[in-house]
Image (cartoon, rainbow, N blue to C red; front, side, top):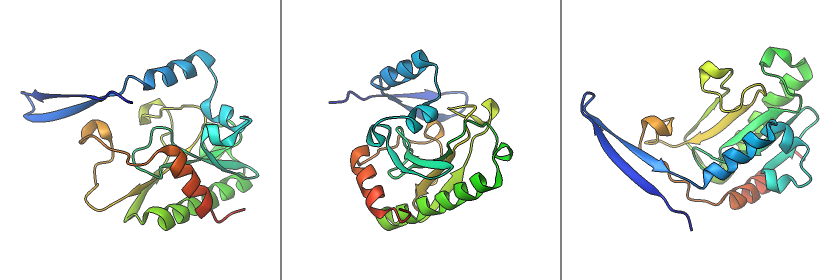
Length: 178
């Protein structure tokens, strides 16, 4: 059972309200990664069990995994196997496969969730808000009409209605590249 505390306050000078979602169970995950001092993506590449790291598919030069803390159900990431910070640091075959895997990710999500659109992109460098710096990764986030707020910190609270193990199962079943 998860304890969720919702705190609401008014910013008087700005005239708007902001909701905060407290999720103390995430601290264990965050501290675990900080103690390892390793890249979570490199760790996922070398994991013995793909399911534990939410890996959907491993290609020749890139892999696809679910985001452990998604914005919406079906939120995936496409990541090069090599630990490089910038897209231009990747060779042409790696860049091409990365684009093909982004396409395969959108196709799987369309089959399962029928979104109205997608946010696809990468946060590169600390100034962009990158949560994992140094290892390039692209987010593939399904979006629906009326769900136009991209960041939880500037919008209402997001609710993920499906367990990640169920999402992983559905995505693997819908995955077209073998």
